[in-house]
Each structure stands twice: as C-alpha cells, then as structure tokens.
Amino acid sequence: MTMYSVDVYSGSSDSIIQDSHAQAVIVKATQGTGYVNPKYNYQVELAKSLGKKLGYYHYAGGGDPVAEADYFINNISGYVGTGMLIIDWEGYQNSAFGTTTWVRQFVDRVHDRTGVWCVIYVSESALAQVANCANDCGVWVAKYASMNWNSWTEPNMAVSSGAFKFITGWQYTGGDMDRYIWYLDEAAWDRFAKANVSNPAPEPQPKVDQAKPVVNPQTTWTDTLGDTWHSEDGTFTSNQAINLRWGAKISSAKITTLPAGSVVKYDAWSNHDGYVWIRQPRGNGQFAYMVVRDARTKEAFGSFK
Image 1 (cartoon, rainbow, N blue to C red):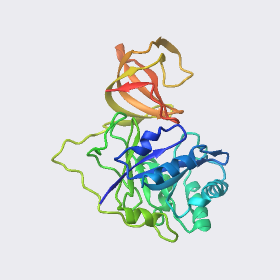
Image 2: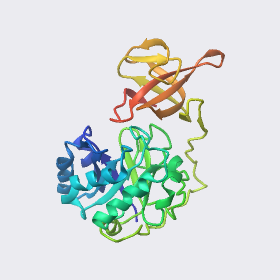
Image 3: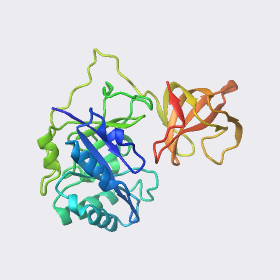
Image 4: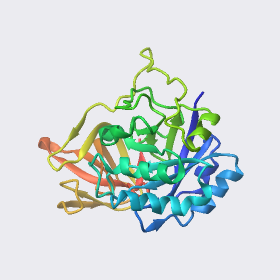
C-alpha cells in the first residue's frame, strides 16, 4: 500500500492541506535556531481536523546540529509522538551543506531526547551526505521528472536509495505544489512517529515499467560555477516583468527586462542561490538566463508548458 502527502510552510495556501489526494500533511516547524513557522499550529490543527496523518520538519540552517535539534524539539514538544519527525537537508540557507556529520549529530540528538528517529529529506544527488544514517533513519528522496509535473500521477522513473536499503518516500514534483508518494500504509506511518523504532520497512516499491514511456530528466551537469543543471525542453510564460541575463546569477549582466506575458523557450533549469533558473538558447551557441521561481517560498513568476 502507498500513501500520498504534501508539505506546507508559512506561505502555503490552505487549499494544499485540503487537497483530497493528500492523506498526510508535513508542516514546517522550525529553521536554524531563530525561526518558527508562525502558522505552524494553525496548519497542524487544520490537517488534524481533516483526518490527515502528520509530519513535522526542521529545515537545517547549518549551525550547531545539537542546538538546532533542541530548538526543533522544544518548539514541537506538544506534538512529539503524533507524527513523523523530519530533518530537511538542502543547500539553500544551509552553511553546513556538503558535510557528512551534521545530519548524523542532529538525528542522534532528536533520538536521545524523544526516542524517535527522524526521517531524512534529501535530494538524490546528496544521498552520500547522509549515508551514515542509513541503519537508523528512513529516507525521503527528492528527484523531479520536471519542474512542471503538476500531477498526482507519479512519473515512471528510477530513483536511487543510496546507502539506504529502501526509499521510504519520494518527492516527484515541486511545481504547483510539492507532491510525495510514501511506500507506507497508515500503521507504518504511525510507527515512524513512535519511540525506539529504527527505519521500519516500507511496502514493496513498484518497479519501473519498461513497457511504459519513461519520463527522464535526461542530462544533468554541473557548470563552472558549481551549479547543477537539468536538461528539459519547455516554455515559460511570465506573469510579471523579469530580467533576462547573460548568466544565471543576480549579479550577471542584464540583456533586457521582459514584460509580463513574455514567452520564453528553455532547454534546461537549475535550482541555486534561492531561485529556480531557466536557460534560453540563443544564436551562435549563446544562452540567456532568467529566474522563474523563488526556491524558498516556491512562488512561480509565471506558468510552464
């Protein structure tokens, strides 16, 4: 059996929690040691009122992992035992990203205080950074088929579990909302919330059906600035004026400012420096770049096809 979920933060619409496809809602609680989601309690109670399973996540800020674990637990103490505990390990606003000890120290501290092992949210490309947690923690892998997969039907593609024996959950889109499939039933979800249970085995995961067309992100590469790009042919239509630049940095030289309603064909996208960027092919082997989404708030600056 499988389950589906969404996640929410302070800027999320109530409609995401209310979406009938989602059997579980994962709520951002804290970040670093100085931020608490001001809508946290409201969002949790709304999800509870709808009978959804719950998860609570801490976004790693890269400071002292023990201090961040304490901050997380201190702020969700009333909910410990009622939902999955999650550490969100991403590169944005995380000064420790790239290290291999931070998450291990965080999950150990949470376990010491609560008896619960966190589930780890991490992109497929960064699984090696949390490999030393594989014997204790479940893993929730982020790997998108594309930036505009706005569907509850999961794409037919392979996802690595790295050092983990299996994938507990998979985020397969971050378009109009974050969608996840979990290889769990409700009883297994509840076991993740309880003390002294290491990495419960999920339901058997479906194999990629080779008879079906595979949605493939195709080529992925890292440019000379260290930013990872994903090949994708698409069309973006802006809903506001956006700068078109010669490079994928806010500091890059501006070519022009495109007005709202501009249609841009792109061949690749990248999530870095707080934004999702697209690359526009131009003549003579040149490219232009523009931001199309705020990676922190997930606000899109237009629509994708």
